[in-house]
Image 1 (cartoon, rainbow, N blue to C red):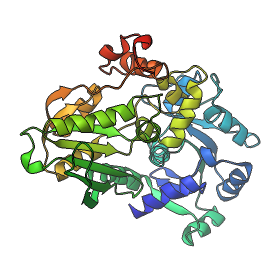
Image 2 (cartoon, rainbow, N blue to C red):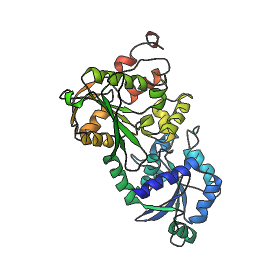
Image 3 (cartoon, rainbow, N blue to C red):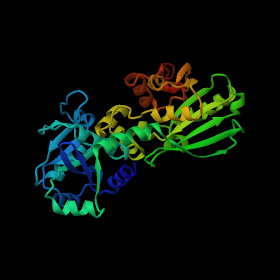
Length: 370
């Protein structure tokens, strides 16, 4: 896990990471930080084929065909590799391209998972390496470049989601519930932290407490953005949980449905050009919803909670918790107000993501407060 932590940090800093796998090894660079200088350095270290690793979501968004569930590897020409890579996976105006490509191997998909976990654009430059790449061997030996194995990437991903560590906690009186406790959990890779908010006195909770799993939204929760209903949902949920005798709110570090704040703001820019939230995320290389809920189930297990009434409009959350052994005794809707800025966003969630929002989006914006 320590090696994976460093790999994530190195990718975010623009440093190359060496990835070994049963068939050989490769040097990977995050496209987000790519420059001619970094590419030249990578080519001086790795003598093998260079290629762009891109997700099936991005590929389909720009008009490329992919097999179901398969990401792509696109060979790059030596002379214009950087320009080609940036156009195919980083140019947000690109909608169609027809390069030669193949399905990504399992090790290449694992490397893309590292980029996602680092909340970078999910696109990498990969260069095959060989035992006689002496400069690379020396840099790995002296610690200049980190080498990780694909098996370690897979193992770390499982450990990271399932074993968050309880770090600290404190009583924090709230306007809706003066007896509330914040408990902070940190994922094993050290990058993400989540909070369990215990509303009210657990000794006097209902037999089946209410639960809200709330994905962090800086723009909505803190600044009251009108582009979403997140802040209203957060405050409404805390008040409702308190009114019902207490329960739990899990505040999960899943900004932008799991793509991170930087990519969420990129998606907002794309939405301003006419795309809806799902198509904007796909053009960036993400699925419609990148969130996973193993960490939420692990937090509930640590808290000794196995049966809840879930406050959600998202059927996916119910299914995810049930897969991880949490009993869902009932569901309560949690809505914000429709306005002219979030109407398309909420409609897209209802029509394309299957969220239970018919009561909200069926009303005219003119009838709602702005």
